Length: 158
Image (cartoon, rainbow, N blue to C red; front, side):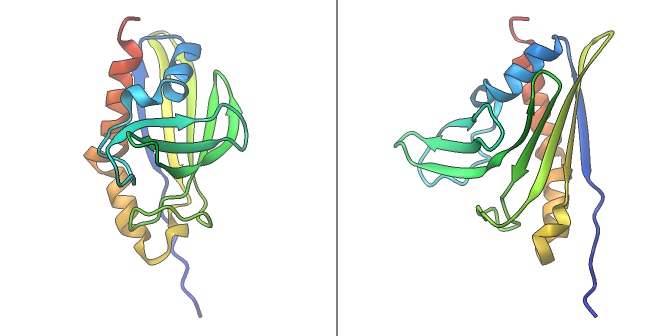
């Protein structure tokens, strides 16, 4: 009998002092401004991260030499309230076109601006390396640090 593990989704949130429309725009269109250059699969120096603004669009990175690497794709595109990305990075930090974990981001207006709630789920689909990947994306330098940098950029000039 095969044992199936189930891991709780990694959930992180940040409040930004901007409208949901602005929060969504910075998260998607302006992702190159805040995505950490250290979080890349590129062999050449990092230049940008891009999310194509439509269902089925690519989520990828570009190096200074023009080379590219995929991170995943867009599953749901509902500006300014919801985005679901397919994360196709395996536990060895390599692109796997057959891997399908999800990163859902919801943008909800409140009295202080916008609550940006992120959920990275189905990490168990990564197989035997899933527990380590779960720990990595849930660590302080994982989604928490990435969302904090996002918050700074979203509020800059707001």
